[in-house]
Length: 419
Image (cartoon, rainbow, N blue to C red; front, side, top):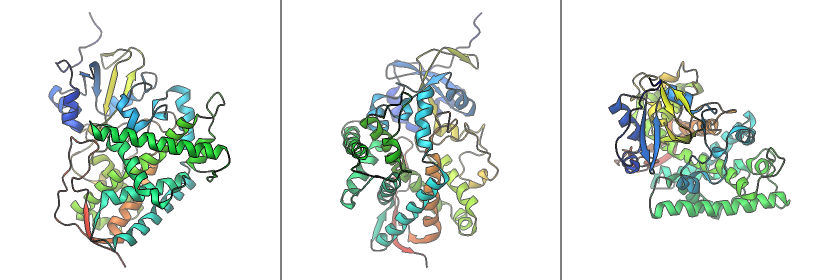
């Protein structure tokens, strides 16, 4: 008698097109139809396992059971992640590289980031007061491009801001795209990697001298476990792994503006509340709205979990959006309610908008604190420091397009600072 159960399985030769067509809801739709937190399917011509929920996340982030090396599809490597970045490492190599990232996430480093973000919002508000309308998504991407470069120690000429913003955004807007938009993402990464790689070389030659506590300095001089400096391209990939995700926070900020608009009762609380409520609001934005749909890994070695057999080398997807909306973890998950975070203790597996697990030993996103702090500053401006009108527009958002943003990108009119 077998000591394992047959995993629920989606029939058919391949379901890659279904994943593209259904986007964020692909795993959740089958989770509901199978009434199971795990099922087997076929993607890109190979067997794949899809999982959702807190318990699934806990096993997915067990580094004895799963590995990240070679797990990401090539199209994502060529646009979103870059080659040989921290996301693709395992074991001690991953731990050592992750420590490089965490070294700039000190309290002082995060305070510096907060100060830079406030300054850039102030400058932007001066500009917006002179504009008939503001397309928030496009404007915030520029705010965050400047913020990211100043914080990372990357020299940026004002004339280059729009081009760099466009290139960094193309990296996270293109992984799920097909045709020309995907190739725009590839070309953008190649251009930025070449530029940053040149800066790394200049740092090492003493021609560029960023502050010691910045990413450009730290990553340029980082040594691997064998004592070797990272090659220029890998160092550039890791610097971009600071710049690109900060610009991608524009997605959360657009949804923050949407939440402020759609929930005026919550906005009133923000006008009189302390910082704790602002943090609760930001966390609920990150839980409620779609960001990235899933993360991937490969089974490291055969194992059995919940009486299901996982075979070495099998591609496995963990549903981020679905886990953040799992009714087994969240009461009334499809309601926007910041108060749910009042007593939240910070589960590393039930709340995973940017991945789960441990910051230092595991694969949880090192930039999560960055996202929270930058979004809190942005929320303060949107709720407390600006007056504006939200004209009629299409504020709906797709659950198919990845990443998703409101269709109108949130248009604001008559923007004025509050006196």
